[in-house]
Image (cartoon, rainbow, N blue to C red; front, side):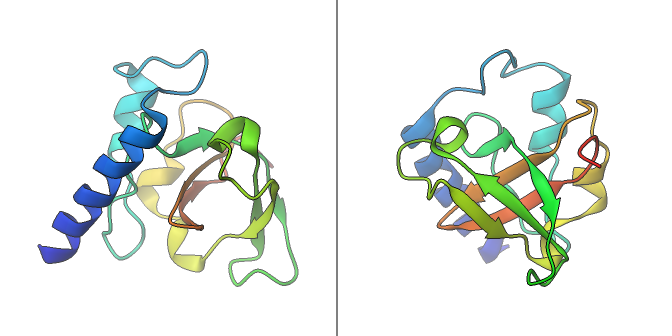
Length: 123
């Protein structure tokens, strides 16, 4: 419960930072509903489409623990993004993130790390 409250507080801060869904995506449609259901494999919430979850590129990686890394670009994630490839943790891929209705790969980036990722459509 405490972890969920902390996650909610972090996500509220992220909403203030970006405050808009990605271009071409409604904040209330089926994609937003899918993103709002995301959790990592430990049950930790991944925030939301209004804040830190964006379509991006995911590629195979020999050095990332999960075998994948994501492009965290400023164009998608804002001016504080590293504009570089970042490893995706094993816990980021959960069943809730894999039910992807978009056909594109998505990542939730917050606190200088990938919280959740969806490989669907990217491979």
